[in-house]
Structures are given as C-alpha cells and as structure tokens.
Length: 228
Image 1 (cartoon, rainbow, N blue to C red):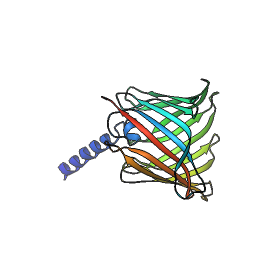
Image 2: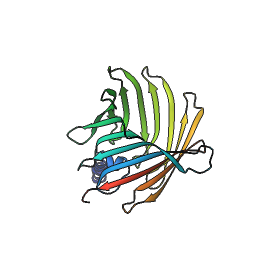
Image 3: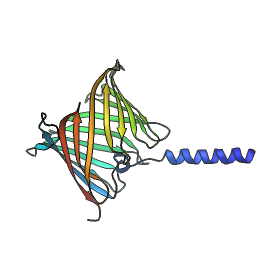
Image 4: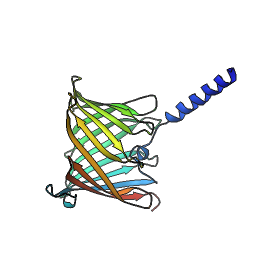
C-alpha cells in the first residue's frame, strides 16, 4: 500500500508539473507550425444579409512572433494604412507573459495589462490600467482540462462585476460561441464564430462572426511561417 501511495504521489506531482509548464503564445492562440507573422484583415458585412460576406476593409493587424513562439508586437492599421495601435509584450525569464503595453497610433501609452496565473499556468486574472496607473478593469478566467478559457468575468476598477462570458470551443480549440451576461445573469449577446479555409498546417484563414444570429464581420488572415 505504501508503494502504491508513493507511486500515486509521484505520478500526480509529475502530472501537475507537466500541466504547469509555460505555454507559448502559439499554443495559447491555437496556432500550428513555426509561425512567424500573422496578418489579419477585418471586413464589414451587410448586416441585413443572412450570411457573412465580406464588404469593406475595416482594420488590418500584423502580429509578429519570436523563435520561442511568443508574441513580440501586435499592430493595427486603418483601411487607409494609418497606425491605430501598437502592443508590446513583456515576458519573464521562463517565457511567461508578464504584461502588455498598448500604445495609441500617436505613440502615447493607452493601456497596460498585467497577468496573474493559476497553479496550472493558466491566466487566471488580468488587470488593466490607464496611463496614470489607475486600475479600470479586471478580468478573471476559468479553464477546462484542455486549457481553454470557458468563463471570463469582468469587473470595473472598484471590483463590481459588470459582464460575464461563457465560451465554447470546437475540437480544434477554436472559439465557436461566446454568451455574454450582465451582473444579474441576464443574457445580453450571443456571438458565434465559423472557421474555414484551413491551410496546410491546419490553421484557419477565414472566420465569420455573428452577433445574435446577425453577421457582424469577416476575418481573413495570411500566415507566414519560419524557414520560408
């Protein structure tokens, strides 16, 4: 019995240690292969149509990853090419995300987000601060056994809950539905996501977004892989 108990404890500790390993951003964002950059285009759609068909380009974003598979920079541009925002990612020596600094198009600091992790290495809490350092929003998440965030609650700077989200995923780990509730648990919005046009690495290059069953936007993305 003692041998069994010891073996169980060792196996349990090994499992927890493996689960707590730091996930890089490629795993966090469900990207496969040695991704170098992801360029994403968001298009408006005809809101009165039943299907999401792209219309006019709204926003272009470019995200760069380092050799460790972590985000280095995320930049958004307007349809005419003007920079809207730039986010810079800061990691510790273990490769864990410490904070994100988001700057406006003119270079001024807009938001700083810091992170707290649970025992399994999941981002259990994020705190958002304005340029003066004042906390204005906190998000708290819960995860399933696959590391997918299935609950995300948002609180204002005074700690009052104002929005709750329940999230579902497909077997590939892609988000398929988000239900948003107010602080009284009244459903406000249901957002659904349809993914398609997968590349050779198994990453989607097309995504349609619907809000309360009405088309909201279309995303197309181009993925550049290292070694090309």
